[in-house]
Image 1 (cartoon, rainbow, N blue to C red):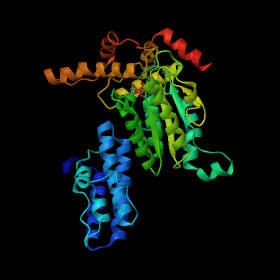
Image 2: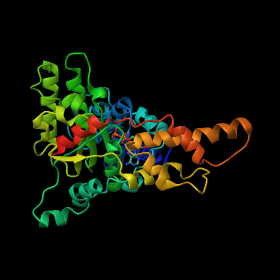
Image 3: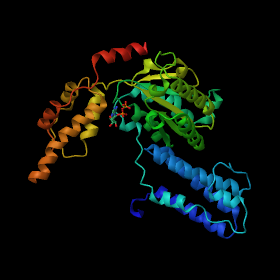
Image 4: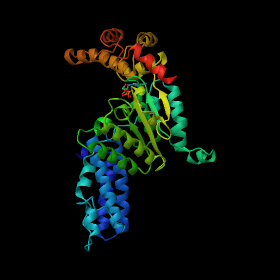
Length: 383
Ligand code: ADP
């Protein structure tokens, strides 16, 4: 796997190796410092991991390394987490054994991280970006100025609007702008039919979040799946319990450690329990609208640039003709338009640019996914 390793994974492996070397010469302090840094890097990668399995795998290894650090410093380690090298270090012996080879292997196998999304990659939504700069980005970058004005950081933000309008992308871009880990929590990763398992998973995710001691953006997607109102007749006892736990976890991490930013997204904001929308939880609401004509034009340009393109494309015309399209609909339109010349290039060996006729054909197949009725509902919710 060495070929696919990125600089980040190489650093983790090098730090674990350095820690083991230090252990070999009985230098516990140097070993602890190396493992602590490796653990922090693994926590960051856990936060950025896409799948729940990878997230937990990485977070567990990161915690094992932290346990080793504690043991090396002579601090006690949670006895529950047995089987770790920390136990072996803590239990004495003249030369502590090298740190868990699995952690090193895991780091070595890490696939390169995807490049971060930035605000510049998002078409339109200028007011939303400005709100996020003011509420999250400037405070995180300028904590001293924030204190001088007697302001406190924190308080989460709810992004609501139709599906495919870029809510996830916006949350990712906050992390990209701050160059901080992005931690996505999906209810589908947490919800389980087994008694107590959903609560245990939520608790574990928040433990990982708290491990991001240098800050992170925590994004709860489809928050309505957990946060639907407790007063609804069909709300079951387990779902009430899980929502209560989410509220407690959110309050527990508020402002601690510094730099943890919370965002949540929903396509159905009217379902949410009012308790979720009170400070310091998701008290600020941001409507993520369908793209306006300028944003549609920018998105079409962004999505079609980088491939052979006819030079007489009427961008404004296409922006007008795609009224009502979400960002995701526009992405699909562009993908379909590109597939036609791509197919010809492969089957006929003839490369030609993407042109008007390709977009025309794609447009006959892609329709706006958001209905006028549902748009009205979002607008009413915001007033
Ligand atoms: P949501 O979370 O609102 O359902 P996503 O953020 O998952 O939507 O967006 C789906 C895809 O649509 C994104 O990966 C991106 O490619 C595209 N997209 C949506 N809105 C925008 C936008 N404003 N600018 C650029 N791309 C967008």
